[in-house]
Amino acid sequence: MTELLSLTYPWAKALHIMAVISWMAGMFYLPRLFVYHAERGRSGTEPTASFVIMEEKLLRMIMNPAMIVTWIAGLWLVATPGIVDWSSIWPWTKAAGVLAMSGYHGWLSKQRKELLAGRGASGRTYRIANEVPTLLMIVIVLSVILKF
Image 1: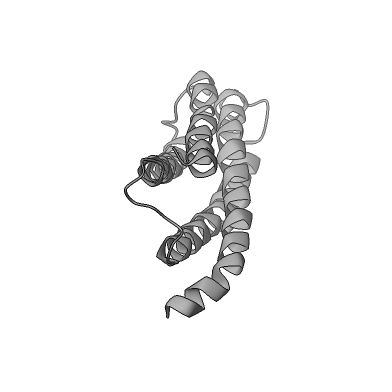
Image 2: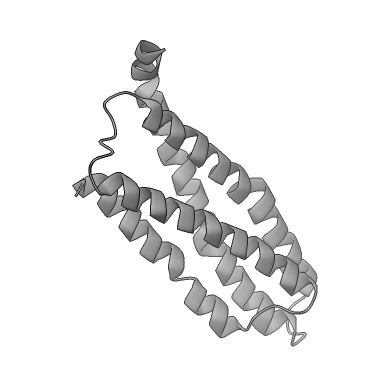
């Protein structure tokens, strides 16, 4: 099993990177859709139905599968012998960042339901929230690259 994990490591790493890119693209775009939905959708200047469809498809068809693949490939990488030194700080900061990113994903999913029910937050709230994935990405990438 150990040898198989080592042989498949480059594939797991490539799959993980592709999934992370897809997930992050959605994490950046969905809050922006929420801004438009909250500000224009309610005022009647744009059809709310368009926002609802775009938000639903982005979350269900891109973000959710990308998050799942990110987690599976990430755990595959962690299971590869010699890759992670758990006595270092970096795997713990990365893990905390990934858990926070997953929580943010859940918050976005809840916000979509709130917007559908007419109880969504303000456009300003979504603009501010749009900075969260950037900050988490910085922590995660620095943890992995610098291995502090």
